[in-house]
Amino acid sequence: MEKRAALSHFQPHGVLISDAAGRPARRAFTEAVLQPGRPLHELAAPFARVIAEEAAGLPSAATLDWDTFNVTWWRVVRRVVLGSAARDDTTLTDQLERLRLDANWAYAHPKRKQLREEFRRRLTGHLDRAEPGSLAAVIAATDAVDAPDQVAHWLFAFDAAGMATYRTLALLASHPAEQDRARSEIDGTEPAQLSYLRACVLESVRLWPTTPMILRETTEETAWGPAGTTVLIFTPFFHRDPGLPYADRFEPDLWLDGRAAENPALVPFSAGPAICPGRDLVQFCASTMLAALLRDHGYEQASGPVLSPERPLPATLDNFHLKLKPVG
Image (cartoon, rainbow, N blue to C red; front, top):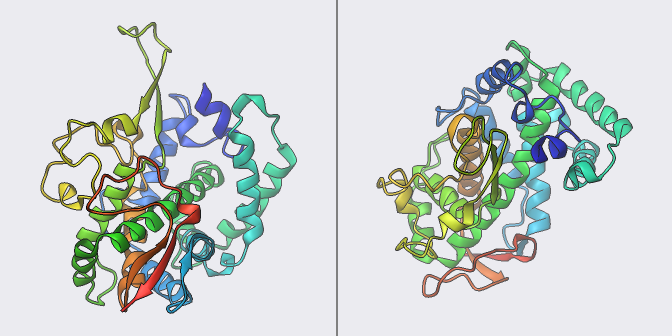
C-alpha cells in the first residue's frame, strides 16, 4: 500500500506497483530492455563512449564535489536512456524530482496530475525519437508495455546509482591499496566488465544502502499476521550485522570470493522476483564512470566524514558534502 501510494505520483503503471495481472508483461518488457544477467548490455559500447565523453568534461585539477559530479552523471543518464538529444533536458529531470518529492509523502500529498502529464509528454517525445545507441532505441524494437512509466522508474533509480558511484569514489580515495588495485584493472579497453570496480560499487551499497527499507506484502497467512501484512526489511541491520567480520570496513573482495553469495541477507539490489532488473546495467555504468575518473590520476578525500581503513566506517554517509581532490 505504501509503495503504491508513493510511486503512483510519477509512475502509476510501473511494474513495482502492478497487480498480478499486469505485472508479468511489464516485468518482461523491463528485462528485455535492461537485460539483467548480462554484465555487458548489447549497447555497452555506445554507453561507454557517452560516459567517457561526459567524464572528460569534469575538472582534472580542481576539487570534485557532489554538485559537479551530479550534473555530469545526469547528462550520462539522459543520454544512455533517451539519447544525446536529451543531454541537456534538465527540465525533464527537474519535473521528475518535483514529483518524487511529493511521492515521499505517499498518500498524504495530493497528486500533481498536470505536472505528471507534462512530464509524461516530454518523456514520450524523447522515447518516440528512438535515438540509436540509447535504451529508447531498444524500447522501440521491443513489445513495449506502459513504457513511459517503466522509464520513469529507471530514471528514478539512476539517481541512487549516482550516489553509490560517488560514494564508491570516496571509499577508493580514502583506501589507497584498494584504489591502486582498481586502477590496475583499467586497461583502456572499452567496454569492459571491470569486476573489481563492480565489487567496489556493490560494497558501497552494502555499507550505505540507497534503498535502506525494502517493503514486501505477504500473500498468505504467516506467523507475522494475515495475508496482506506489510513486512519492512531494514537492510542496514543485516548489511552491518556486528557478527560479520567485515561489517564496518570496506572489503570489495567479499563480492568476488563467494562470501557475499553465501549470505542471503546481503541484498544491494533487493532480491527475489522483484530484484532490480537494472542491476547489471547500473553496475556497468557506475564502474565505467569510475574507470574514466581514475584512468589518469587518483583521488584523495578533501572534506567530509573520515573514511579510513584504520577505523570503522560511519553508519551513514552524506555524499552531498563530500569533496575529493585529484592527485598524481
